[in-house]
Structure formats: structure tokens, C-alpha cells
Length: 282
Image 1 (cartoon, rainbow, N blue to C red):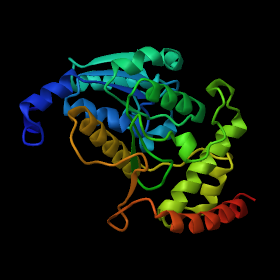
Image 2 (cartoon, helix red, strand yellow; image 1 turned 180 degrees about the vertical axis):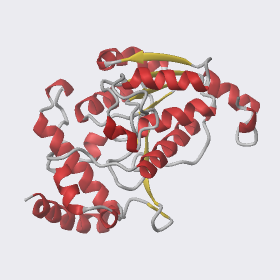
Image 3 (cartoon, rainbow, N blue to C red; image 1 turned 45 degrees about the vertical axis):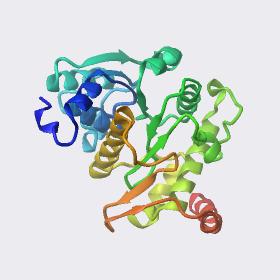
Image 4 (cartoon, one colour; image 1 turned 90 degrees about the horizontal axis):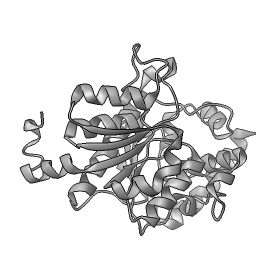
């Protein structure tokens, strides 16, 4: 199956991928794309979790969503799809209980790929990952493909992006806090990338205000998931390079990589972005 991987990875590295285990909470859009790429790369063991079922609106971007899987549990359908690619892959299947067993799942895993978008569960995941010394691969809520690599020593996203959840038990995060977390993330995206030039800003404002679900597009979601998978492989194989906890945005419209802006520029731009968001959401 993996014979054509040779040249990108050595025989020893392929064996390490086969022995590795990756935790992926959320196997819909980016998480599902990362999962499929990692299965095809020859990673041998996974723990995957999801609390949703596939629906028609998922067909535009989620790789395991097909007419045959509509209405099915996402994690179960993704597992079945992965086994059709490699029947020898080991996959532990979890539902809503995954947040209760993180202290078992994380130490068993070499790396975590975060494919879900629940702010409270994300806070919990990042806190426990740091406690157990594991790296989390993630992406921003961005219309441009992005990726971050949050190592144990790096600041948690809730601190770096100024979430209202700092110091609060994750089970006590309210819906209003969740909305504010998303707004802070969107603020960062607009401050450090050219995302505003590539989306409908009226719809983006509705998303930021919690009035509409996040919008997604097949090529952007799949690119981001593949970028996440690449960084996960880099962590497993202990290869140098890659990105850090701030990550980067890939702009396929302009054919360039957009990295976080320098602090003085970001401070000024951030003021403008916050004013813009308040005006749009009003």
C-alpha cells in the first residue's frame, strides 16, 4: 500500500508511522481530510471521536460524507471509510464520552489533530494536552487554509487569543463565552491575514455574531486538513521545520504564505479590525 511513499519517507520512518497513534476529535471537514491523508500515509493507529451525524450540507466539503453516509454517525462512517482504504488500521471509536477519557487517550497518542470547533471542548483538550506533554495540530476559523502546531511549552490558544475562558472550568463555559471565543479567533484571522478580501463580509459578520453556522468550501477545507496531516507526520518523525503555535495562512488566490504580522503592525490593525467587527455585527 505504501510502496510509493518511499522517497518521501524511509523504510524506518514508514515503520514509525505504522506504529504511531493519533487522536482526532472531530472527523468532519478539516479533521476528516487530515484523517484520510494520515490513513493513506500509513499511520497505523487512531482514536477518533465525533458527536454528529452526516447531513446533506456536509457533502460540499467533508470527505467521508457521501449519499450512502447521510444520517450516519460521523466517526463510525469515517472508520468504515478508513478500513476500506487499509483494513489493517486500528481505530478506536468514541462519541460524546471522549472528553471524559482524555487522560487515557492523550498519553497513548503521539500527537493530536483537532478537527472539532467546540470552544469549551477545545479548551479542555488543550489544557489536558499540555498536562500530558503532547502537541496539538490545529487550524483557525479562517476562509484561507491555515495550520498551527501547539507544542506543550507554547501558550494555549485561550491565553494567546484572549478567550474569556481563562481560569474557568471547561464545563462552565457558557454559550455567550463560546460566541466571544469565536469572535476573538475571527479578530485574529482578520488582523493577521487577508481573509477579508476573499469572503462575503456580511455573512462573516453573521457567523461572528452567532447567527449563522461557519461557512466552508471544499478546496479550502481539504487543503487545511492536508496541511494539518503534514505537520502531524513531522511531529511523529521528529523532523525539523514546520510552523509553530501562531501558524500561518496559505493564500491560494495570491499564491503566497501569510505569516503573523509584527506586534506594532498587529496592534494598529487590531484596533481597525475590532471597530470593523462591531460595525458589521451591529
